[in-house]
Image (cartoon, rainbow, N blue to C red; front, side):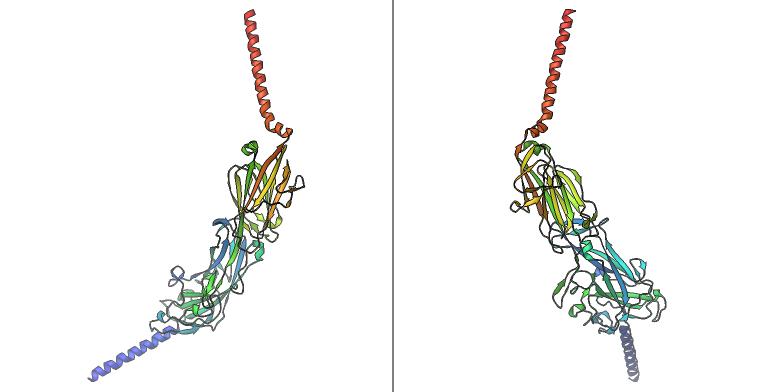
Length: 463
């Protein structure tokens, strides 16, 4: 009986010692993953590379692939702040009890950002080499800011907190709209969960002596409670500089946005079968935005007989020299895609048919025909009223500017209609003169041929 009591006492002591050891391990964060992300973002044991995501949301009336804006973001990583309270999940530990720790200032020495040693990294989009997905309600485009802790010597277990600060040049220069800084500031806080590698004890002096077993990125530097559920605190868990929702406050916040629009230019010829079948009218489309000093790539699509086509060159819209040049026959159109909102589009159409007078009507976005006076083209510099006659080699201009920094959900259409009113003798000569000359030439050749045959016959009879 006495032996059974001694055995029970020994077992009790062993259990108490194990519980104490477990509690000590809990305090050191023994391998639980606090607030780790879903499967794709969960770092595995000994994975020391963490991706913080940058989102750029692109808008366009069509669901389209458009030229990317030209913009660079700079990210600076610093350690701290420390002493932020972190409450660990109860299920992350063998004891089944939550453990609260405070953050330690993050160690920057040895850190690599996007493969380069140092505490500064860059994420860029470039119009010259890249495209982005766009949609009427916005399409997210993601890039990674990779933080590599492989060469960082942590020195102790714990939760290391880092501050990630995002800066960018003048947003307007890229045509990008900055997110609401009050709701979505350009700062994130990263908690990195560190424990000794399985093969070493506490106090390792080499980077390989430490494992990262979890991480959490938050919008604000606040305590994370209870049990790591950041949605019940003001910290707001996130996977980077992206759009999201502050669940506790029921407030949504956006990412940086790239708002763009399109314009389709169509041509119709009426009461002129000759020009309808054979002639392509020249158009010049000019895009101007004084604020956009970074390169922009305006793309295009077309249908019908579209000739003399030159896409707008990659360049800054502030120069006022970004042009699309095209000639359109009847029932043809060209569409320019991915123009930053706030950009003014000017469409010049020239009647270059000799000796003709057209009644020109321009309809914008399917509305009533424009009837205001508009400035004529460069040659000659006159004013031609929309809906009235346009002499040969006169031009009209249509101009509009969607509001900057706003989603433009309209697929803009400029429909130019030329209705023939009169054609001069000169015009008739230019149109039909070649045919008449060809016919007369044929008759002359026929006459000469017959005459030659008759002369040859006469000479044969007289021989």
